[in-house]
Structure formats: structure tokens, C-alpha cells
Image (tube, rainbow, N blue to C red; front, side, top):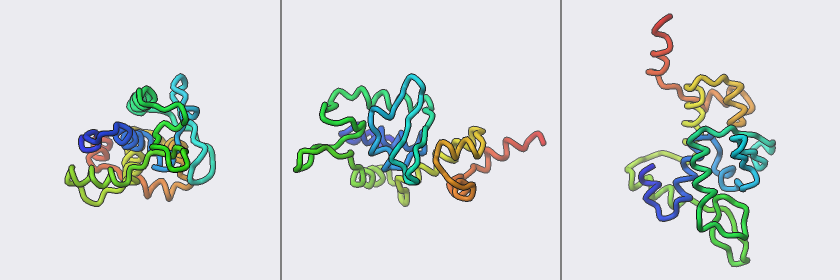
Length: 168
């Protein structure tokens, strides 16, 4: 996170955090608009998902704080509803902020190898399970359609499992 925060544009760090706190895919984060966020209800509603289904994501405290920072970004242009916006293209239209180059640079600065942005989704999913959420609750947040796929994304830490079985 420190390497992400060193980037000149804070949107990069916010996008990484949002992936880690919500399990959202990069495409879902990039296409996120202000209208999809309801801070009063602590939820986000995703319409542009991989499975072409609407999904509502509850916000953790950290996700909410991250979104508040992003939404209050003082450099926000009036010509887009995107939360994470890029510069206008030659056609004058704003597209989502792209991070591929910055992700690679941040990993190099942090001396991290073999970490894809999508791996943050795996980590978030594992954290939800470790926090005690049921498989059904986790899949409603992450949008996984089958328990087999959910299991593929869940990487439990042995020390957490050890703590749980101490009193059996």
C-alpha cells in the first residue's frame, strides 16, 4: 500500500484499497459511478458485472472511508460521474482511470513478484470467510455463482483455523 500511495494520483491507492476491502474486480471499480454509491445505506450497487447481473455490496468501514476520500477529491471534473476518471481522450470523452502501468511500478518499488491486481479479490474473499461470514453471505458480496468457484478464491490461514479448533 505504501508503494501505491507514493503514486502522484491518489486514485490509484483508492482503487487498490477498494479491491482489497470489497473483493470487486478491476473492471467493476473502474466503471463505478457516484450514483452507484449510497453512503447512507453503506452499500454500492454494481450493474456492470462479469456475470451481467446486478450486485449490491455492503461497505466495510475501510471501504466507506476510501470512497468518501475518493468522492471528496477536489480535482473532480463536472463532465463525468465516474469516481475513478481519466483524462479526456482525443474525442473529448472521459474514460475510466487506468492503472496497469502504475500497478507494475508499485510492485517493483515494493519488491513484490507475481501479484496480479485480481489477487486482491482472492485476499478480500478470504478475509470475508475468516471474519465468519457464511459461504452464502460471501458469494452475495463477491458475486461467485458456485461454491466451487468461491472455494477457489478462498485461502484460509492455518493459524486462524488453529485458533478456531483449540476448544474442540
